[in-house]
Length: 388
Image (cartoon, rainbow, N blue to C red; front, side, top):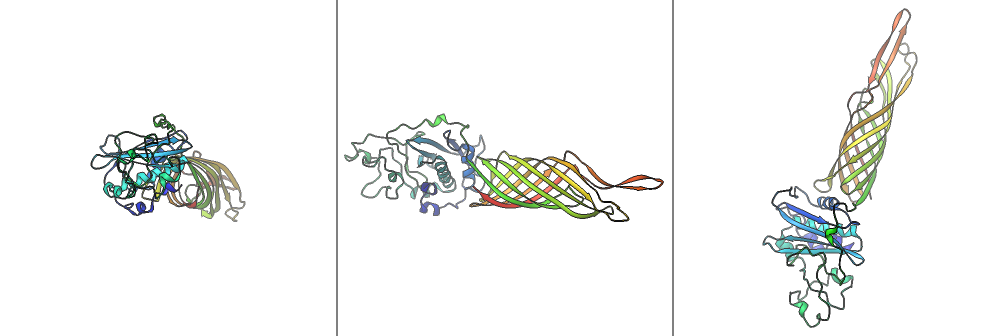
């Protein structure tokens, strides 16, 4: 949606400006639109630093409301400038996900920019109806020609001109309250076409979340399955529901042939892992951090090789691998390309021991331990993939 990216002049104006103060976002949406968590995550991906004020802290407030108008959607942002004036702007479109993404960009620009300079490069909002010949025209709200020109000033007196009097007066949709003024970002003014919009107060935290996902490959090393560190590879998929993440991966690790206690052996792990990440934290763009809990299930296989006269017969054994754990993942998003770096800890529920039995005539059999699964296992993985 074109409005989601705003006008080029604004994109060049102070998008990299440092955040002057913390703000508090108040978001209300519709049941079919992204919820508050998804909206905040979209803003956090665009704004660096600690910009959101905690509860109870005095901060500048921004109100964002998503409403339905006819066959489309409109999202408005309302805030106070340094002089205490109430400022409003809006983004509209036919797809609610695109509209919320567009207002998230507008919000990020409002957080980072100095309001007086943003107002100078933005369009004013008036509470009057558009000219009667183009109230429903899709180009009139967002067309580059719609800002007021010297021949058609956008002053408060212009709605009362004889040319606009035949049209019934309308007011901006999703009005939060207070007088309208010049807005802090350059987007189209929000006006209705005579239809009542849905009450934004009816939307709540139960609004459906923004869906997305990614798939990729990972590689790294793991401890605990063998006497030494074992390398391995895997494939993974991740479902993104708002700020939450749900993942499923399959991987294999192998120590190769290792010598331990005078015995040559090999250890292999084949397993799957499910993981849940309740929230993703946005860091400096384009990075985010995902803390997760996980559970692995699979098979650990150990094999001893014949090495006469020390080992006359090689044998193998398999044991189940069940391990709950936790991990933290650093994710870098570069368009559709995703790069990941992960550290994980696992707690194996079964700590089997692999050993070699020695028997000789006239003496009791003895056992030599080759490896026992430890109480804690660690893994470091890196990977890349595609987001959708």
